[in-house]
Image (cartoon, rainbow, N blue to C red; front, side, top):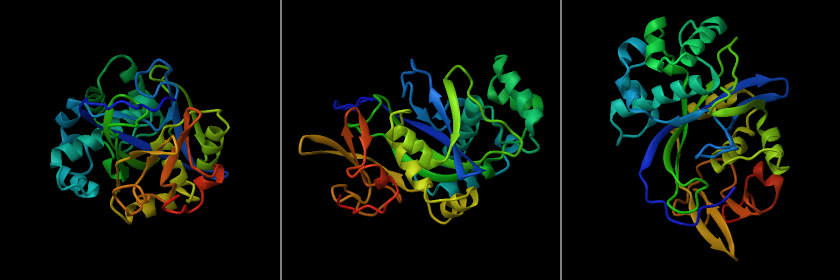
Length: 297
């Protein structure tokens, strides 16, 4: 993975991602997809399902196909600068991307058979809103818990494109099977956060910073209920990474770090990652993912 050292001057694209959770034998598990190696965004990297907001997301018949009105979705995000339609479109994009990339359908009454039927319609070339209309589906925006907002920095990102991504937590619907689509994603896996980070540390998988720090955050929770309860108790933090040079090493700092312009911690995770040997890592090794770090370290 290469850290971009040139300024990115392109537009900042709104995006949405769903961190799908389930309770496994060893505790909380997270669903990860491996993006196709030829993708121009994080090719070969394991990510949470998600993608950019499409214009059609704001054109959905919200009254017919969402279980919450736009004003409620706007309030949940806690971003007064957004209008209600933009907030609703972010939720629609998250639900759409989760379905398109994993086959998981967050809709009232949708079990495994209905999700499979909708997935087949999608693979036949029907758009998301066409599938919703054809099957009279009402999306469960209420299952999405706003979790965090990440804005790609101008310098120091791992992709050339810039995104303003809202991450949502959601438990996977009972009985539904999450899988990759063999198009945008070539592999998928359920892992505990610690196992995912261990595989990253051992170079078995690649992760980007939002996934790295998100998994470090989720490792503090032993169950889906615990993670959702913690997220409900606060507004989603906004994370704007800032890049510094420390003794010739590129370091990406996050809110709460002594070198970041925002001094309040945003996440219970390391406040800085060092770019070493083509990957991002905390300064003091693997266990630093799970410790409460010194804000200045």
